[in-house]
Length: 321
Image 1: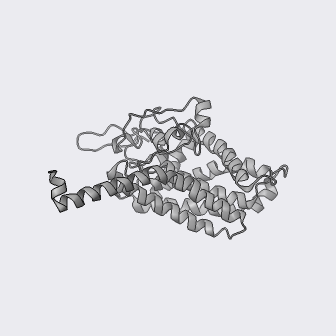
Image 2: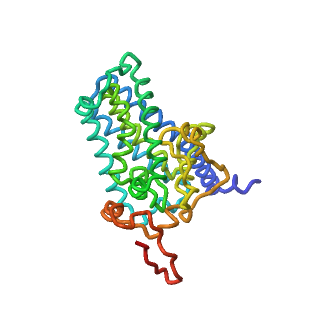
Image 3: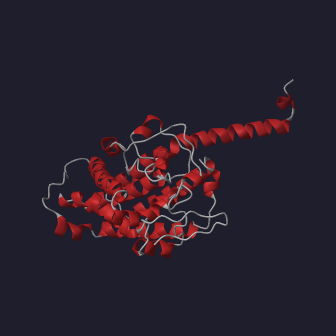
């Protein structure tokens, strides 16, 4: 007789493992659709129905909660779930940058009055199609600025804050210098404002950006099948955070990888595994880790443009200035 069948405790343990495995598989395959289609879809439906845009805050909170839960159910790298003294800093980045996004949404009517060139917004399209159109246009502008931020020194100084991460998890998406985020958002939204972007579409676009950043930097080992070659999600974006100069100059897209394929910057190796040793900036291993220090670093003489001197056996070194 099978020992497991004869021992009630072993039967219970076997059943528990089976249920756990089934639950993990459910999260693995349904987490990304829940955020991409469920959260974004709910935002589109609510705004289209005339509901208060305050509901979008509740949806964002649900997305953040789902992100942290998925990272604990199916972590890609378990140690990335543990704070390395960076939790408070990352929360500060998230609160400040998400607040800036929301403030920019409320400013859309005022901005449109100055920026609109021709009010030709396709208002007759279904609301969901209008949002998708806005996402694709914003994706182009943000991706191209992101690409330029790896080539132009003044932009790289600001963008380096984002590349100083040593663990890869949801909140990393909003770990940006607020000035760099403003430049990216301007590039993404200005073309839309020029043709009469409605505030309702802008509000759902803001939610979609936040959801995408959570998914793109998630520590959850989720699956999207062949869509990983089209959508800019965590499997591909990990390559962008490789710490070596040149190696991380790939997969710049926010929502899609369309522009990376056109720019020749798409890269993916399904067999590659990542650890904290692969992340950060090889030339700047001692980049400031505090929130205020990260805000001021781009304006220092060395910025992120001068490499640190090699670290000796005692872990000592002096940054070049």
